[in-house]
View 1 (cartoon, rainbow, N blue to C red):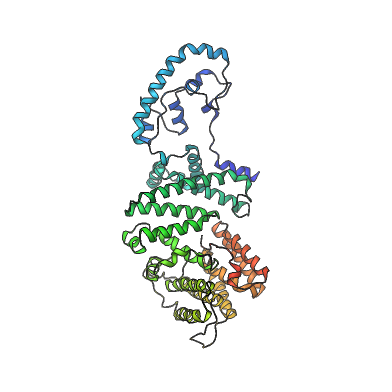
View 2: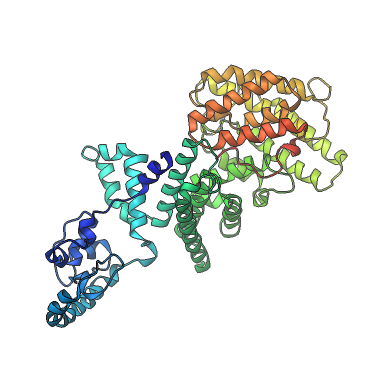
Length: 505
């Protein structure tokens, strides 16, 4: 019953009086079709001819003033007995000729205003809009009379890219169902909403086709390239939101497009697509840390470190409050992991790893500064120390044994793990949202494979609190991945992340 009730949230109820029923009298069947269509859209029809002004201004083909029960036989039309049909036959031919002329005039009048590639099935769009405004953001409607921006947004909804809107609204719905069912978002685990999965993939394919067509045009202006990047970004966002299979492919495509058609520096100069580019670049670097060394998002390694630094240091990220210098160290460690996996001798990698560890040790959270200005909040400084400990621990678990310039001894996992867990315990009560620790927690989880059981239990408790914060499948994914790893008896980083895993969705 619960799944059926949630499914009904996506059903756009249409009155039976719109379509008619076998028992209705004939006069209800003679309502002009254009008026009926506008009534379904909840707008008043002015009955202007040859096409009503509402259809012309909305960029739709006005269907004219045909009686839909005369000119055609749609599947929902009730049967009309032969006596009634014979009685109307004498007047039907003249009316059909008038309707034909009216329809041709209407199509000709509105054809310059039509944009077919932005008009998918109206019913799907209407369902998603209804769900969005009634369930996802009901406050928008409550502020309609008081907030001019809300009214403008509602008026402009017909101008948005509809396939993109549909896939995001559908992904939002599927994610809420998965959270309610305590299951990962998967069509096999949520069979009751399989139709919504089909809808998502159908419209995602439309967005992909639109992106490919835009790339083929090769119109390299900042605006057209921004449009391509924003649409790929939408696909990545929606796929990650429901653990779809194509998010990595879209990330690779996004970064490859930036590399071939643009540059990170060009994006910064243009001031366009900065948010989406920063988000994808940051996610790609984070995802590579929790992916097998042999299965990386390769285009990210083609960007110089100074360009990555310029992009990441633009602003403070509350969901990733990692200092820029430590973020770059994280990226450099992953690149060395890849070289080790390719067979490069550990003796060659060790001195490079020690240089990175020296950089990590030299970082001081108290004197930390950034171009954007570090927030004046003591919690931010503690988080910076937590990320310092996490990046150090990541290097210790993935690099050959290295000497510390501070102590002159080899870095060891257990002390670094205990330091990170201590900082997590210190900062946790001060955080409004635990999402800020999203990368530190998996790092600590791998190190706890041979650590105290009570620390493993603390980590699981935090994941469940994180679930309440974000209402998202991600904590389930983290918890289940680490549980499987702990039970396996393995302790290596590569043994945990046997497939690409997105910790920052």
